[in-house]
Amino acid sequence: MTAFVGGLIGATAVAAPARADVGGVTEYPITTIADSFPAAITAGPDGALWFTESGVSRIGRITTGGTVSDYAVPTPDSFPFDITRGRDGALWFTEIFGNKIGRITTKGQVTEFPLPTANSGPTGITSAPDGALWFTETGTNKIGRRASDGTVTEYPIPTPDSDPYRIAAGPDGTVWFTETISGKIGRVGRDGRVTEFPLGDFDFPFDITAGPGAMWFTAPGANAVGRIDHAGHITKFPLPSADAGPDGITPGPDGSLWFAEQSGRIGRVTPAGVITEFPVPGGADDVPFQIAAGPDRHLWFTELIGNAIGRVQALPGRATKPAPGHVATPPQQLLDRSFQNSLGCVTWPGPRSSTPTPHFSQPWSCSGGAATRRPR
Image 1 (spheres, rainbow, N blue to C red):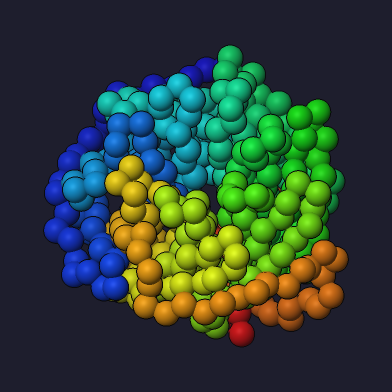
Image 2 (image 1 turned 180 degrees about the vertical axis):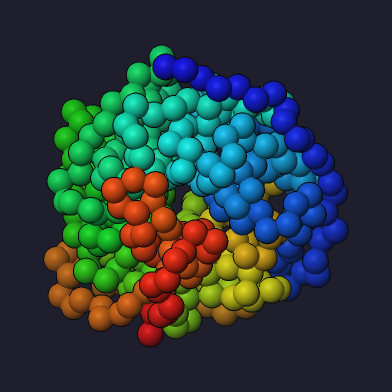
């Protein structure tokens, strides 16, 4: 397999002036480049946060003091999307349109690894305890695994056109992922067998992460966050705010789960289902997208349209509402909602071209037919 290397291409560093705090939330504008579309974010081994800049094919870094650096990905227009910390001390990321897995060291050295299947659309990525990287292939409806020696294995998903999106390693050696279009949570066992657990037809599960006692996920179509245990039992917790658009989710330092709401809030749910929401200064116009716990014991998130990185203190929020949850296995009621593709549509370079997807998009690649409805 050929690897493409780019050493410190176009590296820049700027200390971003923070916007005013609102309810414990601080925003740091990305001043190195405009319209970068910061997407995924993760804590690095160097005490900083690393994030993808999907709109400009760069990888960003922000210190806990707010200094932003970024590094160009060698392949132009590759749409770097998800990012994870690898077991080797580097950061690994997906390139949706580049059809590659990328690696960046904490010094900014970028290497790219092409995938064997054309137009696979690598989207979500996670690191497993054995050093392997697992990723979703939205374009080919498969789950991929890249071993530490570079060998790639693919696992077909039983449901056709399921739209596998985000992926996370479980505590028991399994890997879990969301199927946005089919409305299911998937699991790849240690034997490679794929098992699927249905939610509601219009739940549109987005992100997933390991949390207290279960895997936790966001379901914007249901306006809820949920949990699924190893046996497949699912519980959903409705959100207090209507049309919240929950997206990224991560465990916090306080034992709760924290999630980004595209409607302009950061949410927190305790294992018991008590939900708290924090408004971000720019509101819904900024589109809070993905979120990660930082080394400073605060939560850091991306603002997809606001072109900023935000930070929220792990403290009680402005409003708390008990959410007892409801068991949804099997679902008794399908939520008759239509979910907006908040940014437009994606044009895939392969057979699924002009297929709209509800979780991300390139507004510049749309040629009509983009969804415009929000959950209602």
